[in-house]
Length: 326
Ligand code: F6P
Image 1: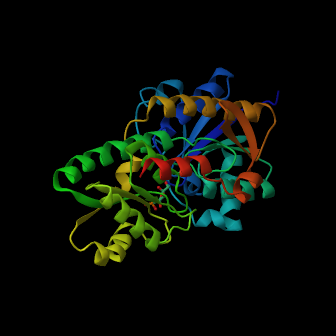
Image 2 (image 1 turned 90 degrees about the horizontal axis):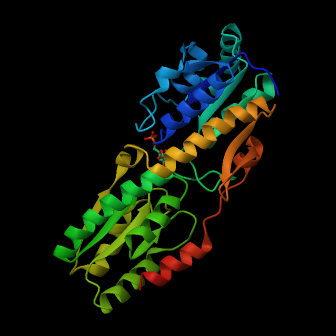
């Protein structure tokens, strides 16, 4: 087992519910082995600025149920530069930090990979993003909670949509990926989904909706991933409205509500498992890997691999959505 004196923990990129549970797990797993823990505030920018604070066990108490991140998060332009990373290294050295746990998405792991190629301090990643778009893990921390937020919101919209026989376009997050829209669409019985991974143009959509009305479905909900190539819910509504003149069309963008809230049981548990596993990976002398979860087992995926590959959408879920939306 590798010996560590002190490890640093940071959260980076877009926040996600369950990040706090992961911070708590990583901190307590390290403290359990008598390793000191430092919280690095504001992500990589804080590493460059020297925003370090010792974390004791009680300081990560009462946070497992809280959304957001107590360490705050930021996207750092400076860390993209060699000089920024060198300054971060100097600060880590000065603080005697000999290992780092990074909780974030693929941008965060890109930064970690660059750093570990240049300097000798090992970094291990924990996937934290509501988008679930990381290769090498079935789930990312925050995805399940965001899905639950989506179903709560869409169910409410369906109540009012069906009272008025309306056609709704609802935009969910997912700048580059449609995982939230796909599972969210199945879970809410959406009539159609538009995601960046599938080229489903508005001609198809119009045909699909026309069929739906023919089958006497008077309420229709289309979930649109923000990154879909149509350009988002407002754009799609604009593109179809000519053909559906007699229908009442409304648009709702769910926005950042999807990033907040108390994490679900599922997210708390995987965040606890992954946070602890990240420290165990460091003790195991691993570096430049993301801790993931495949088929309910912890796996270690090299940063290189998770950055390079794109996670595929589940085709059978797509087919199922198509079948069930007739
Ligand atoms: O957390 C990922 C994500 O939710 C994307 O789906 C979205 O495009 C992005 O973050 C928006 O984040 P921000 O407003 O922080 O730039």
